[in-house]
Length: 103
Image 1 (cartoon, rainbow, N blue to C red):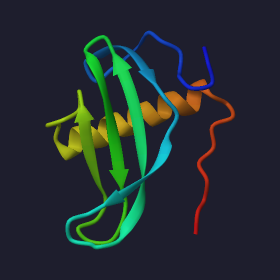
Image 2: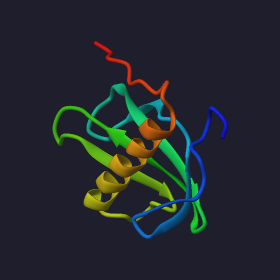
Image 3: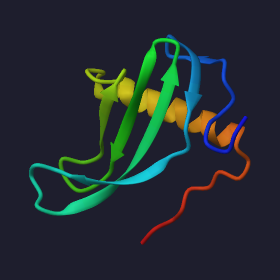
């Protein structure tokens, strides 16, 4: 196991052999806003493919998720469930994992 990924072989949400990288803070821009803000990006790979989920938290229309790669086309509910599940995999596999409180 390396510091950039969790142990392999985890199964969840119908996906097998999941490997999840630690959360990363990324810049995002919404259509309805001319301001660049930050979001959390979670990258995962599994036997079915690779992809990422970006969690954008902010003012209306409120928090939402964006799926990329394998997660493209997933519903908001399924993306939220995957994001939560994969975040828990990261937290349980890396005892040094800590979310920063910004602002």
